[in-house]
Length: 425
Image 1 (cartoon, rainbow, N blue to C red):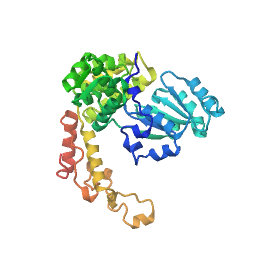
Image 2: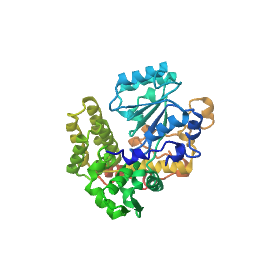
Image 3: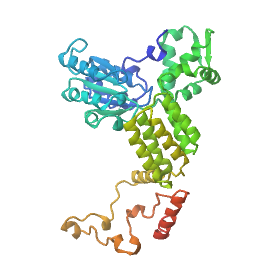
Image 4: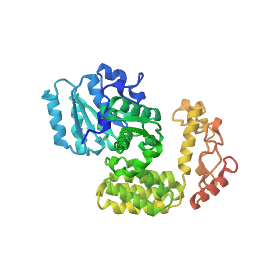
């Protein structure tokens, strides 16, 4: 069986590396460091197929560092310690200081496995490059994260994916054995979802399915071939984001049947239980919010429970939570409110805090008017008194607009009673 196209044309230097210009373009934050051989320990965070492994290899080659790789799926603490010992002694593969240790899917390492890296990274025995598709703030222990720079890799843009296809036609000897005309690329790019490896897998699959010496790639042809052979190019979990998207949208759309179906797909596919529970926790606030505040409590308890228990029993807890959330009334009012507030802050900058609600811990600040005329709500009937809490420039701006559900309609009526016409409720 031949080496996959994605591997055959894997770039070996920065000049051939497509995309991630914010990191390794002419003015990228890593470019000069790599060329000078000054490489910090880092975590490369991005979706599948964005070039994390390729970038790690290029960093090692360009900086002249010895390179060793471990997979978090198949390696344990013993493997990590063996590599570190070799690095300390300069044995075998490691012949210079600061060799690079690349750990793929570092989010799958347990706390003890990540702990085993701390000393080596801190003392400079190895330069760690970890690759992850998950948010390192959740999946990498704080002590290790504090010793690493985190660089975010973005999904490939359309022009990058088109460049990659043309590069494959120009560079790959096996593709050159046929006359290939790339007439249309939209279907290839849409199916790839910004994943370069997936794009090349589909591209190769389509070409291999044609026996003719001359092949013209069209959108209709790609869709027909890809739908027939989906399983062949989806063995590495590249549906990960599609299925979690379907799961979340099913719950948001109040369909518990679809929700448990997509949950089952993830469980059967070996999805990380914490990843599923974390997405439920986010959804409980983003899509349900104050329409049913208990949803957040249920989701948080679910996260805690499945983290402790694990599979297979966690499937029951996840199912209960997913069904509860699907059956809950929905509101994204809190989500919209914070986005509106952030947009206003970005546009208006650091507006002054009104003097009346500033902190006045010293005599000087009191003399300057800090806290003057502040009205303590509990001193008034109903524990409320109209007061100005926003900067003058945005006074009266409504960020939170209650959703149309029983709970938030009650909030709306309550706020209308308090604030009269100040806010648009």
